[in-house]
Length: 253
Image (cartoon, rainbow, N blue to C red; front, top):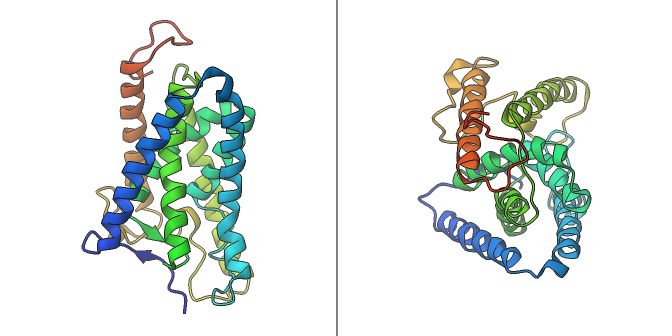
């Protein structure tokens, strides 16, 4: 039987195996691209893009072909932020669009980091699902670092605000999609549609999550926390920026 929304806690040994895998795997991944010769950088990035797209396709296909897993429109579609972003960064490894990079940079770093730190597996905790989870979410916060370090992706003035507006727009649309799925589509599983966690607060420990506030009020501190995180990441980026594409930006720009 599939158990939805499985939280993996620090009290479990597999939690620390996942953390160790993310740290070691992420470090080796970044260093590997750092050491690539210039001739190999472009073709290897495109290959990475195709690998990420195949990886993003795994979970929906797995839920269809696995006889022990019940495919559900309410839970099996790749509509979570992390699922969407792994598709977007996969395509961006192939096309290298600065605008697409801006839309994904902040959300992948924040989402990937917190997803690894507080694992919540929405379609169960089968071994393949756990391995897929850690690969995807480690990629989310390492691929953008590689794009900056090795491939010269840069941010312009207030790109962090553009990234937030994109995230806010997508999550607002997802409220409507969740609502339509829950009202008009037969639920073949035992869990409601909660893509991007904009219908019900996720059962994880986070200082910006207040489940007692109820919907939609629990979303307000989440958005505040998202803005704060984006601003801090932007300030760190500006401190370490090399060859900026704008002249003398302030840390908050």
